[in-house]
Length: 113
Picture 1 (tube, one colour):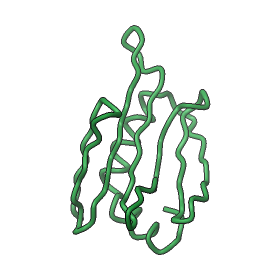
Picture 2 (cartoon, rainbow, N blue to C red):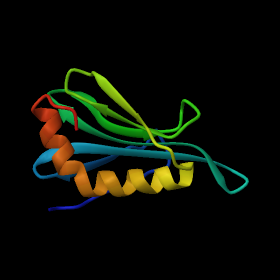
Picture 3 (cartoon, one colour):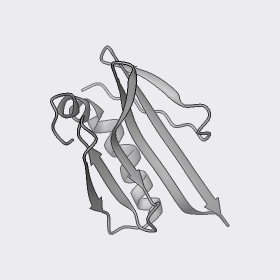
């Protein structure tokens, strides 16, 4: 399995990745206060036609760490992660890095990754 993941720290400068002949976008943003992560988001997007669509997103924007999984129609399944933000961020990085091909394939078939 091919593996590639990159992180950027500014929402104004996303990183485009060419994985397996298709264009994908990985986004990551972390907010630190006193050396601790207080908010985070890591997501995988792919270009479908002319639109960028979210496939998988890990974040903390509801004051708990969770994973959102989307199908190609934009429907979402939310999974609460019962771990600290630092652990969730590591999980997100590793999960997207290791499983992006599977997620992309399921998403393009209309399934939830």
